[in-house]
Image (cartoon, rainbow, N blue to C red; front, top):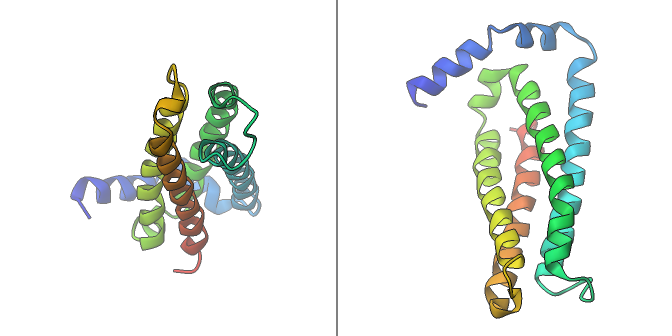
Length: 159
């Protein structure tokens, strides 16, 4: 692990947020519940957009309109998931920082966000039908990446 990352984890382990998370009986459970709800909303939006992008569902709904309508929900759920996830990580930064499943989840999250941005970009072009194969492929890959984020999150507690 790079020294700067190790320094950050060490710093985070000595913050008031870490102390508060570890003193509270309910903080971790409540924040984890909020995190999981945010992830469920994110998952719903991703499934809706990507499955539509693959042409498997809601074929009568214009994809550009669906993507534009979903952005506020996606953005709000992502913000809640990131903040709640950061709070959860702050409860045991060394544990999470060295957890292979956590590291994989973070890497997959970055790729999944890039994939969702690519799906959104392809879908909101003037004529998304000009790139149907690319849209379907990127939608399928993005869906798989988000599934990997979920699996990685689940494995954090098991590794």
